Amino acid sequence: MHHTAAALVIEGLTKDFGPVPSLDGRMVRVLDGVHLEAAMGSVTAILGANGAGKTTTLECAQGLQRPTAGTVRLLGENPHRASPRLRARVGVMLQDGGLPPSVKPMALLRHVASMYADPRPVDELAERLGIDDFGGTSIRRLSGGQKQRLALACALIGRPEVLFLDEPSAGLDPQSRTIVFELIKELRAAGLAIILTTHLLDDAQKLADYVYIMEGGRTVAQGTVADLTAGAAPENFRELRFQSVPGLEIPPELLPHLHRAEPEPGHYLVSGALTAADFAALAQWWDSEGILPVAVSMAPRSLEDVFLDIAGRSIR
Amino acid sequence: MTQAAPLARRVLRHGGYEAVAMLRNGEQLVLAVALPLLALAGLVATPLLDGFGPSRIDTAAPGVLALCVMSTAFTGQGIATGFDRRYGVLRFLSTTPLGRSGLVFGKAAAVAVVLALQVVLIGGAAVLMGWRPELAGLPWAVLTFALGAAAFTALGLLVAGTLRPEATLAVTNLLWIVLAAAGGIILPAAGLPAAIEPFVRILPSSALGDGLRAAFLEGSFHPLSCLILLGWAAVASAAAVRWFRWS
Image 1 (tube, rainbow over the protein chains, first blue to last red):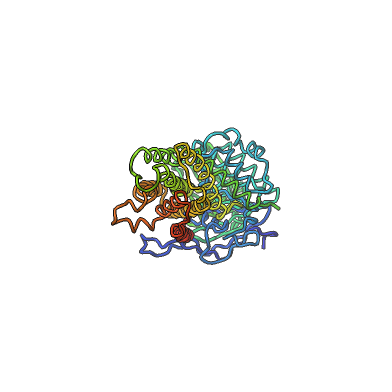
Image 2 (image 1 turned 120 degrees about the vertical axis):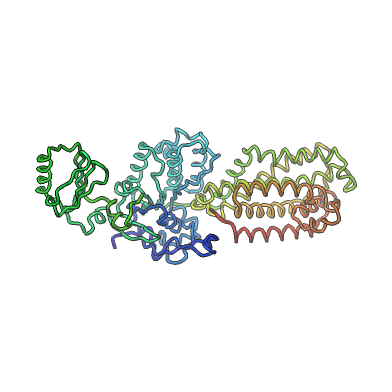
Protein backbone atom coordinates (compact mmCIF):
# COMPACT_ATOMS: atom_id res chain seq x y z
CA MET A 1 0.00 0.00 0.00
CA HIS A 2 1.35 3.35 -1.01
CA HIS A 3 -1.16 5.33 1.03
CA THR A 4 -1.18 6.03 4.72
CA ALA A 5 -4.63 7.59 5.16
CA ALA A 6 -7.11 6.72 2.41
CA ALA A 7 -9.76 9.33 1.63
CA LEU A 8 -11.28 7.28 -1.16
CA VAL A 9 -11.14 3.56 -1.86
CA ILE A 10 -12.76 2.12 -4.99
CA GLU A 11 -12.73 -1.62 -5.60
CA GLY A 12 -14.02 -3.49 -8.64
CA LEU A 13 -16.32 -0.65 -9.64
CA THR A 14 -18.65 -1.46 -12.52
CA LYS A 15 -21.30 0.84 -13.98
CA ASP A 16 -23.83 0.02 -16.66
CA PHE A 17 -26.01 2.62 -18.35
CA GLY A 18 -29.15 1.96 -20.28
CA PRO A 19 -31.11 0.28 -21.61
CA VAL A 20 -30.07 2.11 -24.78
CA PRO A 21 -32.82 2.16 -27.45
CA SER A 22 -30.30 2.41 -30.34
CA LEU A 23 -28.67 -0.82 -29.09
CA ASP A 24 -31.94 -2.81 -29.06
CA GLY A 25 -32.40 -1.92 -25.41
CA ARG A 26 -29.13 -3.41 -24.27
CA MET A 27 -27.08 -1.97 -21.42
CA VAL A 28 -23.77 -0.21 -22.02
CA ARG A 29 -20.90 -0.98 -19.65
CA VAL A 30 -19.18 2.33 -18.99
CA LEU A 31 -16.99 1.21 -16.10
CA ASP A 32 -15.59 -2.28 -16.01
CA GLY A 33 -13.41 -2.91 -12.98
CA VAL A 34 -12.05 0.35 -11.60
CA HIS A 35 -9.64 0.08 -8.68
CA LEU A 36 -8.49 3.31 -7.17
CA GLU A 37 -7.27 4.71 -3.91
CA ALA A 38 -6.67 8.35 -2.97
CA ALA A 39 -4.74 9.54 0.07
CA MET A 40 -5.17 12.57 2.29
CA GLY A 41 -2.59 15.27 1.65
CA SER A 42 -2.02 14.33 -1.96
CA VAL A 43 -3.25 15.00 -5.48
CA THR A 44 -4.55 11.93 -7.28
CA ALA A 45 -5.09 12.41 -11.00
CA ILE A 46 -7.31 10.22 -13.18
CA LEU A 47 -5.93 10.50 -16.66
CA GLY A 48 -7.60 9.29 -19.81
CA ALA A 49 -9.03 10.17 -23.19
CA ASN A 50 -12.63 11.30 -23.61
CA GLY A 51 -14.99 8.42 -22.91
CA ALA A 52 -12.48 6.46 -20.82
CA GLY A 53 -14.81 6.62 -17.81
CA LYS A 54 -13.17 9.35 -15.72
CA THR A 55 -16.29 11.41 -15.02
CA THR A 56 -18.45 8.36 -14.29
CA THR A 57 -15.82 7.15 -11.82
CA LEU A 58 -15.91 10.52 -10.06
CA GLU A 59 -19.71 10.56 -10.05
CA CYS A 60 -19.79 7.15 -8.38
CA ALA A 61 -17.24 8.40 -5.84
CA GLN A 62 -19.32 11.53 -5.18
CA GLY A 63 -22.52 9.54 -4.77
CA LEU A 64 -24.17 11.03 -7.86
CA GLN A 65 -24.31 7.61 -9.55
CA ARG A 66 -25.12 4.29 -7.99
CA PRO A 67 -22.51 1.64 -8.87
CA THR A 68 -23.75 -1.46 -10.69
CA ALA A 69 -21.18 -3.55 -8.81
CA GLY A 70 -18.13 -3.01 -6.66
CA THR A 71 -17.58 -0.86 -3.61
CA VAL A 72 -16.86 2.81 -3.07
CA ARG A 73 -15.78 4.13 0.34
CA LEU A 74 -15.46 7.87 0.72
CA LEU A 75 -13.98 8.84 4.10
CA GLY A 76 -15.01 5.35 5.21
CA GLU A 77 -18.66 5.73 4.16
CA ASN A 78 -20.81 4.78 1.20
CA PRO A 79 -21.22 8.04 -0.75
CA HIS A 80 -24.50 7.00 -2.35
CA ARG A 81 -27.21 8.37 -0.08
CA ALA A 82 -24.52 10.17 1.90
CA SER A 83 -25.51 11.99 5.06
CA PRO A 84 -25.23 15.80 5.17
CA ARG A 85 -22.41 15.18 7.65
CA LEU A 86 -20.39 13.38 4.97
CA ARG A 87 -21.30 15.89 2.26
CA ALA A 88 -20.02 18.72 4.44
CA ARG A 89 -16.57 17.12 4.37
CA VAL A 90 -16.47 16.75 0.59
CA GLY A 91 -16.23 19.53 -2.03
CA VAL A 92 -17.27 18.87 -5.62
CA MET A 93 -16.53 20.78 -8.80
CA LEU A 94 -18.53 19.30 -11.67
CA GLN A 95 -17.32 19.29 -15.25
CA ASP A 96 -20.20 21.48 -16.43
CA GLY A 97 -20.02 23.62 -13.30
CA GLY A 98 -23.63 23.19 -12.24
CA LEU A 99 -24.05 26.95 -11.94
CA PRO A 100 -27.46 28.64 -12.33
CA PRO A 101 -27.13 31.12 -15.25
CA SER A 102 -29.42 33.85 -13.90
CA VAL A 103 -27.75 34.13 -10.48
CA LYS A 104 -24.84 36.44 -9.65
CA PRO A 105 -21.56 34.83 -8.54
CA MET A 106 -21.34 36.39 -5.08
CA ALA A 107 -24.99 35.59 -4.33
CA LEU A 108 -24.44 31.96 -5.30
CA LEU A 109 -21.26 31.69 -3.25
CA ARG A 110 -22.99 33.15 -0.19
CA HIS A 111 -25.88 30.76 -0.65
CA VAL A 112 -23.63 27.70 -0.89
CA ALA A 113 -21.70 28.96 2.16
CA SER A 114 -24.93 29.05 4.17
CA MET A 115 -25.17 25.25 3.92
CA TYR A 116 -22.13 24.85 6.20
CA ALA A 117 -21.74 25.51 9.91
CA ASP A 118 -18.33 27.14 9.54
CA PRO A 119 -17.63 28.11 5.92
CA ARG A 120 -14.55 29.94 4.70
CA PRO A 121 -15.01 33.71 4.71
CA VAL A 122 -16.77 34.36 1.38
CA ASP A 123 -15.04 37.67 0.62
CA GLU A 124 -11.60 36.26 1.25
CA LEU A 125 -12.09 33.27 -1.05
CA ALA A 126 -13.71 35.47 -3.71
CA GLU A 127 -10.73 37.80 -3.64
CA ARG A 128 -8.27 34.92 -3.77
CA LEU A 129 -9.90 33.51 -6.91
CA GLY A 130 -10.58 36.93 -8.43
CA ILE A 131 -14.36 36.43 -8.28
CA ASP A 132 -14.97 39.83 -6.72
CA ASP A 133 -14.01 41.34 -10.11
CA PHE A 134 -17.17 39.88 -11.67
CA GLY A 135 -19.23 39.16 -8.54
CA GLY A 136 -22.20 41.23 -9.71
CA THR A 137 -22.40 39.95 -13.31
CA SER A 138 -24.95 37.24 -14.11
CA ILE A 139 -23.29 33.84 -14.42
CA ARG A 140 -24.53 33.45 -18.01
CA ARG A 141 -22.31 36.39 -19.04
CA LEU A 142 -19.10 34.96 -17.54
CA SER A 143 -16.23 33.50 -19.57
CA GLY A 144 -15.37 29.81 -19.28
CA GLY A 145 -12.43 30.58 -17.00
CA GLN A 146 -14.54 32.80 -14.72
CA LYS A 147 -17.21 30.10 -14.40
CA GLN A 148 -14.51 27.54 -13.65
CA ARG A 149 -13.07 29.70 -10.83
CA LEU A 150 -16.56 30.22 -9.38
CA ALA A 151 -17.26 26.48 -9.46
CA LEU A 152 -13.96 25.90 -7.66
CA ALA A 153 -14.89 28.49 -5.03
CA CYS A 154 -18.26 26.78 -4.51
CA ALA A 155 -16.44 23.46 -3.98
CA LEU A 156 -14.05 25.02 -1.46
CA ILE A 157 -16.34 27.29 0.53
CA GLY A 158 -17.26 24.60 3.07
CA ARG A 159 -13.63 23.79 4.04
CA PRO A 160 -13.75 20.25 2.59
CA GLU A 161 -11.33 17.49 3.54
CA VAL A 162 -11.76 15.80 0.18
CA LEU A 163 -11.97 17.81 -3.03
CA PHE A 164 -13.17 16.42 -6.38
CA LEU A 165 -12.25 18.41 -9.48
CA ASP A 166 -13.57 17.23 -12.84
CA GLU A 167 -11.31 18.71 -15.55
CA PRO A 168 -10.27 21.70 -13.43
CA SER A 169 -8.19 23.43 -16.09
CA ALA A 170 -10.78 23.18 -18.88
CA GLY A 171 -11.35 26.63 -20.36
CA LEU A 172 -8.84 28.34 -18.08
CA ASP A 173 -6.72 31.18 -19.46
CA PRO A 174 -3.02 31.02 -18.48
CA GLN A 175 -3.46 33.48 -15.62
CA SER A 176 -6.45 31.64 -14.10
CA ARG A 177 -4.55 28.40 -14.51
CA THR A 178 -1.67 29.70 -12.43
CA ILE A 179 -4.06 30.89 -9.70
CA VAL A 180 -5.91 27.56 -9.64
CA PHE A 181 -2.74 25.43 -9.67
CA GLU A 182 -1.19 27.43 -6.82
CA LEU A 183 -4.36 26.99 -4.80
CA ILE A 184 -4.45 23.23 -5.43
CA LYS A 185 -0.85 22.88 -4.22
CA GLU A 186 -1.66 24.93 -1.14
CA LEU A 187 -4.70 22.76 -0.34
CA ARG A 188 -2.60 19.63 -0.68
CA ALA A 189 -0.08 21.08 1.76
CA ALA A 190 -2.99 21.76 4.14
CA GLY A 191 -3.73 18.02 4.09
CA LEU A 192 -6.69 17.76 1.70
CA ALA A 193 -7.19 14.79 -0.55
CA ILE A 194 -7.58 16.17 -4.05
CA ILE A 195 -8.94 13.88 -6.73
CA LEU A 196 -9.02 15.31 -10.22
CA THR A 197 -9.63 14.10 -13.74
CA THR A 198 -7.81 15.45 -16.72
CA HIS A 199 -7.05 14.63 -20.31
CA LEU A 200 -4.12 17.05 -20.21
CA LEU A 201 -0.87 15.21 -19.55
CA ASP A 202 0.75 18.47 -18.60
CA ASP A 203 -1.76 18.97 -15.74
CA ALA A 204 -1.05 15.53 -14.38
CA GLN A 205 2.70 15.99 -14.68
CA LYS A 206 2.59 19.35 -12.89
CA LEU A 207 0.11 18.55 -10.12
CA ALA A 208 -0.28 14.86 -9.45
CA ASP A 209 1.40 12.89 -6.70
CA TYR A 210 -0.23 9.75 -7.97
CA VAL A 211 -1.71 9.00 -11.38
CA TYR A 212 -4.27 6.46 -12.55
CA ILE A 213 -4.56 5.94 -16.28
CA MET A 214 -8.01 4.91 -17.46
CA GLU A 215 -8.83 3.27 -20.76
CA GLY A 216 -12.09 1.62 -21.82
CA GLY A 217 -13.68 1.88 -18.38
CA ARG A 218 -10.75 0.35 -16.51
CA THR A 219 -7.81 1.64 -14.53
CA VAL A 220 -4.98 0.23 -16.65
CA ALA A 221 -1.89 1.74 -14.99
CA GLN A 222 -1.03 3.58 -11.84
CA GLY A 223 1.91 5.10 -10.02
CA THR A 224 3.71 8.33 -9.32
CA VAL A 225 4.63 10.33 -12.39
CA ALA A 226 8.25 9.24 -11.82
CA ASP A 227 7.26 5.55 -11.51
CA LEU A 228 5.13 5.66 -14.62
CA THR A 229 7.65 7.46 -16.78
CA ALA A 230 10.50 5.25 -15.59
CA GLY A 231 8.45 2.10 -16.19
CA ALA A 232 10.59 -0.62 -17.71
CA ALA A 233 12.81 1.98 -19.36
CA PRO A 234 16.47 2.26 -18.33
CA GLU A 235 17.51 5.15 -16.14
CA ASN A 236 19.29 6.88 -19.01
CA PHE A 237 16.26 6.75 -21.31
CA ARG A 238 16.09 10.10 -23.05
CA GLU A 239 14.18 11.71 -25.84
CA LEU A 240 16.49 13.86 -27.93
CA ARG A 241 14.77 16.23 -30.30
CA PHE A 242 16.38 18.47 -32.86
CA GLN A 243 15.08 20.72 -35.54
CA SER A 244 16.73 21.24 -38.91
CA VAL A 245 16.00 21.02 -42.64
CA PRO A 246 13.44 18.34 -43.53
CA GLY A 247 14.31 14.97 -45.04
CA LEU A 248 17.61 14.21 -43.32
CA GLU A 249 18.50 10.50 -43.20
CA ILE A 250 20.33 9.51 -40.04
CA PRO A 251 22.68 6.71 -41.23
CA PRO A 252 21.63 3.28 -39.90
CA GLU A 253 25.09 2.52 -38.54
CA LEU A 254 24.95 5.69 -36.44
CA LEU A 255 23.33 5.10 -33.02
CA PRO A 256 21.89 1.67 -34.03
CA HIS A 257 20.48 1.04 -30.55
CA LEU A 258 18.32 4.15 -30.62
CA HIS A 259 14.87 4.66 -32.08
CA ARG A 260 14.74 7.49 -34.60
CA ALA A 261 11.79 9.24 -36.24
CA GLU A 262 10.76 12.41 -38.04
CA PRO A 263 7.25 13.02 -36.58
CA GLU A 264 6.94 16.33 -38.44
CA PRO A 265 9.02 17.53 -41.39
CA GLY A 266 12.29 18.92 -40.01
CA HIS A 267 11.54 17.73 -36.45
CA TYR A 268 13.66 14.73 -35.45
CA LEU A 269 13.26 12.45 -32.45
CA VAL A 270 15.96 10.06 -31.25
CA SER A 271 15.00 8.03 -28.17
CA GLY A 272 16.39 5.18 -26.08
CA ALA A 273 19.18 4.56 -23.57
CA LEU A 274 21.31 7.51 -24.45
CA THR A 275 24.90 8.25 -23.43
CA ALA A 276 27.04 11.36 -23.77
CA ALA A 277 29.07 9.43 -26.39
CA ASP A 278 25.88 8.99 -28.49
CA PHE A 279 25.30 12.70 -28.25
CA ALA A 280 28.89 13.35 -29.38
CA ALA A 281 28.47 10.95 -32.32
CA LEU A 282 25.34 12.74 -33.39
CA ALA A 283 27.08 16.11 -33.17
CA GLN A 284 29.93 14.74 -35.29
CA TRP A 285 27.43 13.64 -37.92
CA TRP A 286 25.84 17.12 -37.93
CA ASP A 287 29.33 18.58 -38.45
CA SER A 288 30.14 16.16 -41.30
CA GLU A 289 26.81 17.03 -42.99
CA GLY A 290 27.37 20.72 -42.44
CA ILE A 291 24.18 20.99 -40.32
CA LEU A 292 23.63 23.23 -37.32
CA PRO A 293 20.19 22.41 -35.83
CA VAL A 294 18.05 25.45 -34.98
CA ALA A 295 16.90 23.75 -31.76
CA VAL A 296 18.07 20.81 -29.67
CA SER A 297 16.39 19.46 -26.53
CA MET A 298 16.69 16.42 -24.32
CA ALA A 299 14.09 15.13 -21.84
CA PRO A 300 13.26 11.95 -19.95
CA ARG A 301 10.29 9.81 -21.01
CA SER A 302 7.06 11.78 -20.68
CA LEU A 303 3.62 10.71 -19.52
CA GLU A 304 2.56 11.08 -23.13
CA ASP A 305 4.87 8.19 -24.11
CA VAL A 306 3.54 6.12 -21.24
CA PHE A 307 0.01 6.76 -22.36
CA LEU A 308 0.88 5.88 -25.94
CA ASP A 309 2.47 2.62 -24.82
CA ILE A 310 -0.50 1.65 -22.68
CA ALA A 311 -3.44 2.84 -24.72
CA GLY A 312 -1.83 2.37 -28.12
CA ARG A 313 -3.07 5.77 -29.15
CA SER A 314 -2.62 9.41 -28.37
CA ILE A 315 -4.72 10.89 -25.56
CA ARG A 316 -6.10 13.63 -27.78
CA MET B 1 -14.10 18.61 11.36
CA THR B 2 -16.21 20.40 8.78
CA GLN B 3 -19.89 20.41 9.67
CA ALA B 4 -23.15 21.01 7.87
CA ALA B 5 -25.46 23.83 8.92
CA PRO B 6 -28.53 22.51 10.82
CA LEU B 7 -31.24 20.93 8.62
CA ALA B 8 -33.87 23.61 9.30
CA ARG B 9 -31.43 26.38 8.39
CA ARG B 10 -30.39 24.65 5.16
CA VAL B 11 -33.99 24.16 4.03
CA LEU B 12 -35.07 27.68 5.01
CA ARG B 13 -32.06 29.29 3.34
CA HIS B 14 -32.69 27.34 0.19
CA GLY B 15 -36.40 28.13 0.31
CA GLY B 16 -35.60 31.84 0.60
CA TYR B 17 -33.07 31.61 -2.23
CA GLU B 18 -35.54 29.89 -4.56
CA ALA B 19 -38.38 32.23 -3.58
CA VAL B 20 -36.24 35.27 -4.44
CA ALA B 21 -35.33 33.64 -7.77
CA MET B 22 -39.04 33.09 -8.52
CA LEU B 23 -39.98 36.65 -7.60
CA ARG B 24 -37.17 38.11 -9.71
CA ASN B 25 -38.34 36.26 -12.80
CA GLY B 26 -40.58 38.49 -14.92
CA GLU B 27 -42.51 35.72 -16.69
CA GLN B 28 -43.07 34.07 -13.34
CA LEU B 29 -44.61 37.28 -11.96
CA VAL B 30 -46.95 37.53 -14.94
CA LEU B 31 -48.11 33.97 -14.27
CA ALA B 32 -48.30 34.36 -10.50
CA VAL B 33 -49.79 37.82 -10.15
CA ALA B 34 -50.84 39.51 -13.39
CA LEU B 35 -52.86 36.66 -14.92
CA PRO B 36 -54.78 35.83 -11.70
CA LEU B 37 -55.63 39.52 -11.23
CA LEU B 38 -56.76 39.68 -14.83
CA ALA B 39 -58.87 36.55 -14.31
CA LEU B 40 -60.43 38.08 -11.20
CA ALA B 41 -61.34 41.27 -13.04
CA GLY B 42 -62.66 39.32 -16.03
CA LEU B 43 -64.85 37.05 -13.90
CA VAL B 44 -66.36 39.98 -12.07
CA ALA B 45 -67.02 41.91 -15.27
CA THR B 46 -68.69 39.03 -17.16
CA PRO B 47 -71.71 36.85 -16.31
CA LEU B 48 -69.67 33.61 -16.57
CA LEU B 49 -70.09 32.66 -12.90
CA ASP B 50 -73.63 33.89 -12.40
CA GLY B 51 -75.77 31.32 -10.58
CA PHE B 52 -72.87 29.54 -8.80
CA GLY B 53 -72.88 31.75 -5.71
CA PRO B 54 -74.29 34.80 -3.99
CA SER B 55 -72.12 37.21 -6.00
CA ARG B 56 -69.62 37.10 -8.83
CA ILE B 57 -66.65 38.06 -6.67
CA ASP B 58 -67.51 35.53 -3.94
CA THR B 59 -67.50 32.72 -6.51
CA ALA B 60 -64.51 34.03 -8.45
CA ALA B 61 -62.06 34.67 -5.59
CA PRO B 62 -61.66 31.06 -4.32
CA GLY B 63 -61.17 29.82 -7.88
CA VAL B 64 -58.55 32.45 -8.64
CA LEU B 65 -56.68 31.54 -5.45
CA ALA B 66 -56.73 27.95 -6.68
CA LEU B 67 -55.36 29.20 -9.99
CA CYS B 68 -52.48 30.82 -8.07
CA VAL B 69 -51.54 27.40 -6.68
CA MET B 70 -51.33 26.02 -10.20
CA SER B 71 -49.25 29.01 -11.39
CA THR B 72 -46.64 28.79 -8.67
CA ALA B 73 -46.47 25.18 -7.52
CA PHE B 74 -46.91 23.56 -10.92
CA THR B 75 -45.96 25.80 -13.84
CA GLY B 76 -43.45 28.19 -12.24
CA GLN B 77 -41.73 25.67 -10.02
CA GLY B 78 -41.73 23.00 -12.74
CA ILE B 79 -40.05 25.25 -15.32
CA ALA B 80 -37.43 26.48 -12.82
CA THR B 81 -36.63 22.90 -11.77
CA GLY B 82 -36.42 21.73 -15.38
CA PHE B 83 -33.81 24.34 -16.26
CA ASP B 84 -31.88 23.79 -13.00
CA ARG B 85 -31.68 20.17 -14.00
CA ARG B 86 -30.42 21.05 -17.49
CA TYR B 87 -27.66 23.29 -16.09
CA GLY B 88 -26.48 20.70 -13.55
CA VAL B 89 -27.58 22.90 -10.65
CA LEU B 90 -29.54 20.04 -9.08
CA ARG B 91 -26.50 17.76 -9.27
CA PHE B 92 -24.16 20.32 -7.77
CA LEU B 93 -26.50 21.29 -4.92
CA SER B 94 -27.13 17.63 -4.13
CA THR B 95 -23.39 17.24 -3.42
CA THR B 96 -23.54 20.00 -0.79
CA PRO B 97 -24.99 19.39 2.69
CA LEU B 98 -28.36 20.53 1.29
CA GLY B 99 -28.67 17.14 -0.44
CA ARG B 100 -31.53 15.90 -2.60
CA SER B 101 -34.15 15.90 0.13
CA GLY B 102 -33.10 19.40 1.25
CA LEU B 103 -33.48 20.59 -2.32
CA VAL B 104 -37.02 19.25 -2.57
CA PHE B 105 -38.05 20.61 0.85
CA GLY B 106 -36.43 23.94 -0.03
CA LYS B 107 -38.45 24.12 -3.24
CA ALA B 108 -41.62 23.33 -1.32
CA ALA B 109 -40.76 26.09 1.17
CA ALA B 110 -40.22 28.54 -1.72
CA VAL B 111 -43.62 27.59 -3.17
CA ALA B 112 -45.19 28.21 0.26
CA VAL B 113 -43.56 31.65 0.56
CA VAL B 114 -44.67 32.76 -2.91
CA LEU B 115 -48.19 31.38 -2.36
CA ALA B 116 -48.47 33.31 0.91
CA LEU B 117 -47.56 36.51 -0.92
CA GLN B 118 -50.09 35.72 -3.65
CA VAL B 119 -52.85 35.12 -1.09
CA VAL B 120 -52.14 38.51 0.49
CA LEU B 121 -51.97 40.30 -2.85
CA ILE B 122 -54.77 38.60 -4.83
CA GLY B 123 -56.93 37.94 -1.76
CA GLY B 124 -56.47 41.60 -0.77
CA ALA B 125 -57.48 42.75 -4.24
CA ALA B 126 -60.56 40.52 -4.09
CA VAL B 127 -61.56 41.95 -0.70
CA LEU B 128 -61.23 45.45 -2.15
CA MET B 129 -63.52 44.29 -4.97
CA GLY B 130 -66.12 43.24 -2.41
CA TRP B 131 -65.18 39.64 -1.55
CA ARG B 132 -66.62 38.62 1.81
CA PRO B 133 -65.38 35.06 2.48
CA GLU B 134 -67.08 32.83 5.05
CA LEU B 135 -64.45 33.00 7.80
CA ALA B 136 -65.74 29.85 9.52
CA GLY B 137 -64.38 27.93 6.55
CA LEU B 138 -60.87 29.33 6.89
CA PRO B 139 -59.28 26.22 8.50
CA TRP B 140 -60.79 24.02 5.76
CA ALA B 141 -59.58 26.44 3.11
CA VAL B 142 -56.04 26.36 4.54
CA LEU B 143 -56.06 22.54 4.58
CA THR B 144 -57.38 22.29 1.00
CA PHE B 145 -54.95 24.96 -0.19
CA ALA B 146 -52.00 23.09 1.38
CA LEU B 147 -53.06 19.76 -0.13
CA GLY B 148 -53.47 21.44 -3.52
CA ALA B 149 -50.02 22.99 -3.24
CA ALA B 150 -48.55 19.58 -2.35
CA ALA B 151 -50.29 17.86 -5.27
CA PHE B 152 -49.28 20.48 -7.83
CA THR B 153 -45.69 20.73 -6.51
CA ALA B 154 -45.31 16.97 -6.87
CA LEU B 155 -46.82 17.07 -10.37
CA GLY B 156 -44.49 19.92 -11.35
CA LEU B 157 -41.47 17.99 -10.08
CA LEU B 158 -42.63 14.88 -11.94
CA VAL B 159 -42.83 16.74 -15.26
CA ALA B 160 -39.56 18.64 -14.67
CA GLY B 161 -37.69 15.49 -13.69
CA THR B 162 -38.75 13.36 -16.63
CA LEU B 163 -39.02 15.72 -19.64
CA ARG B 164 -36.53 18.06 -21.30
CA PRO B 165 -36.79 21.64 -19.95
CA GLU B 166 -38.25 22.94 -23.24
CA ALA B 167 -40.93 20.24 -23.08
CA THR B 168 -41.54 21.03 -19.40
CA LEU B 169 -42.04 24.68 -20.33
CA ALA B 170 -44.53 23.76 -23.03
CA VAL B 171 -46.43 21.10 -21.08
CA THR B 172 -46.79 23.05 -17.83
CA ASN B 173 -47.91 26.22 -19.63
CA LEU B 174 -50.33 24.32 -21.84
CA LEU B 175 -51.84 22.43 -18.90
CA TRP B 176 -52.16 25.71 -17.02
CA ILE B 177 -54.23 27.17 -19.86
CA VAL B 178 -56.32 24.03 -20.44
CA LEU B 179 -57.03 23.48 -16.73
CA ALA B 180 -57.72 27.17 -16.14
CA ALA B 181 -60.26 27.13 -18.95
CA ALA B 182 -61.87 23.72 -18.50
CA GLY B 183 -60.31 22.07 -15.45
CA GLY B 184 -63.03 23.06 -13.00
CA ILE B 185 -60.70 25.44 -11.25
CA ILE B 186 -62.37 28.83 -11.78
CA LEU B 187 -65.46 27.64 -13.58
CA PRO B 188 -66.94 24.82 -11.43
CA ALA B 189 -67.14 21.40 -13.08
CA ALA B 190 -70.92 21.57 -12.68
CA GLY B 191 -70.94 24.30 -15.30
CA LEU B 192 -69.07 22.24 -17.88
CA PRO B 193 -70.64 20.06 -20.61
CA ALA B 194 -72.05 16.82 -19.15
CA ALA B 195 -69.77 14.70 -21.35
CA ILE B 196 -66.57 15.86 -19.67
CA GLU B 197 -67.87 16.76 -16.22
CA PRO B 198 -67.20 13.37 -14.50
CA PHE B 199 -63.61 13.36 -15.73
CA VAL B 200 -62.99 16.95 -14.73
CA ARG B 201 -64.28 16.24 -11.22
CA ILE B 202 -61.39 13.91 -10.43
CA LEU B 203 -58.75 16.40 -11.63
CA PRO B 204 -56.70 18.14 -8.93
CA SER B 205 -57.67 21.51 -10.41
CA SER B 206 -61.37 20.82 -9.95
CA ALA B 207 -60.90 19.35 -6.47
CA LEU B 208 -58.90 22.39 -5.36
CA GLY B 209 -61.43 24.83 -6.82
CA ASP B 210 -64.43 22.97 -5.33
CA GLY B 211 -62.75 22.60 -1.93
CA LEU B 212 -61.92 26.29 -1.71
CA ARG B 213 -65.37 27.34 -2.91
CA ALA B 214 -67.06 25.08 -0.34
CA ALA B 215 -64.90 26.55 2.43
CA PHE B 216 -65.19 30.20 1.47
CA LEU B 217 -68.79 30.24 0.16
CA GLU B 218 -70.47 27.98 2.74
CA GLY B 219 -67.83 27.63 5.47
CA SER B 220 -68.03 23.87 4.98
CA PHE B 221 -65.52 21.05 4.62
CA HIS B 222 -65.48 19.21 1.31
CA PRO B 223 -63.85 15.85 2.20
CA LEU B 224 -63.98 14.43 -1.34
CA SER B 225 -61.86 17.31 -2.67
CA CYS B 226 -59.26 16.71 0.02
CA LEU B 227 -59.20 12.98 -0.72
CA ILE B 228 -58.75 13.60 -4.45
CA LEU B 229 -55.92 16.07 -3.80
CA LEU B 230 -54.31 13.68 -1.33
CA GLY B 231 -54.49 10.92 -3.94
CA TRP B 232 -52.87 13.10 -6.63
CA ALA B 233 -50.17 14.22 -4.19
CA ALA B 234 -49.41 10.62 -3.20
CA VAL B 235 -49.34 9.23 -6.75
CA ALA B 236 -47.33 12.15 -8.19
CA SER B 237 -44.82 12.02 -5.30
CA ALA B 238 -44.34 8.29 -5.69
CA ALA B 239 -43.91 8.68 -9.45
CA ALA B 240 -41.46 11.56 -8.99
CA VAL B 241 -39.40 9.55 -6.51
CA ARG B 242 -39.38 6.63 -8.96
CA TRP B 243 -38.71 8.45 -12.25
CA PHE B 244 -37.10 11.80 -11.42
CA ARG B 245 -33.76 12.05 -13.22
CA TRP B 246 -31.28 14.41 -11.59
CA SER B 247 -29.20 14.94 -14.71
